[in-house]
Length: 534
Picture 1: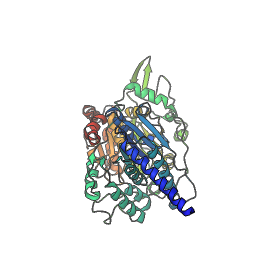
Picture 2: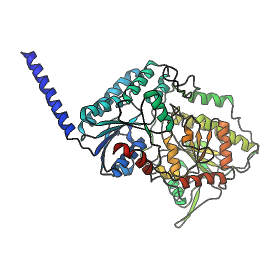
Picture 3: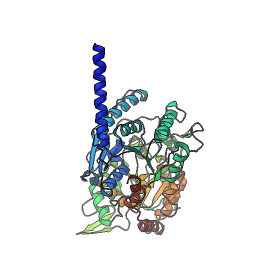
Picture 4: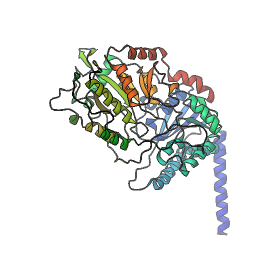
């Protein structure tokens, strides 16, 4: 009898569940969309831009779902048509191996994501960012079937190629991830991607037809003004105080060679030489470039909150006899303010900027070697008018502490480093204040494009970018920037663009090209994405 009652109870529960789901399917709101980011939603600008476009261009209700962490754009937070759902990230448990923590993390993500997707108003579409694909792809597909929604994917990269950076391309888990991503990706009714190379790869290897939606800067990325440089340096003055910004004259003082054994050994420990490509013939005949892997583990870093930031041991990078600079309301190393008028100094340092995640796939050893080469050429009088360079690096990540410690041990004569952790609203202003951008991005798949370069282009900042297979879709060599493979090439580019700064016609010409093109997110989204969801 008890068994019969149990079965009757189970039948009633199933009947009620089916009735509820059917009711929801019949009364679904055709003017809403759920956008899923299985990561820090504040660090997912593309999905935030998608949310704004759906709300502003198509007039639909948006449920933006992701993990808490960084703050979203003010435009997202203030839009009444966008509901932000922040999930709790899985806590870091020290001492447990990856094979133990990974299943626990996945289970936590499944439960949270299912709960949010099943409790929000029934969406017409569930539109997820990929990667990551585990477990978001199976969860989004399952809920879309359950609730009668359409399943859509925005392909940023290939999830299994990122996993291969940690485990190696021959790992059974990487091969299983490949099959998982390939199989479930075919169930998507709408697919968008970030490059033509990715579109072709998806069609060839996954049999998935995707529409290219290039990352483009939204309207809040604009060319900078003199006032912007002065105000942003003042706000983040802690990162610039205590440095010697006077332009040193070339001397015959010996500079350690760029390929010194100790320097190379230290850099190799941070950025190991790759041993194998991400993909082999077991996956496809599409050849991807070799990538770097790292087994290094660094302690969890604490970042100043809230911004402005403080400098990383800035006092240790100046000698007692140096003329250090303190930023004031009326003067910075780059500008002078008189009343309401701001003027840039003729002998100011050049501002380079590199937005980065401080991860092994952004190989800063190339940048550091290039700086050493430039210093060496200055010391031997090969260059006669090279400026001081303030290298601003935004973002946070596991390699920030060891890289900056390396810089302390191998100081540069013409380059100072300024790590910045910026408020979301200040990030475009800092980019706009720069003279030249540096992109160290190396794609794990070889077919995605760095959105940080797009941000810099939105501020009309030319970029020197690390070369890989499809970067030419974004950075056109000698048109809006320069591409490099080696430290020697990057050093040549820096000398070419910065010697005689600020009177550098080629740098100004590239900036003018970006001003004239003025490509923006809204127009590209309206043409490429809006018709897919109409």
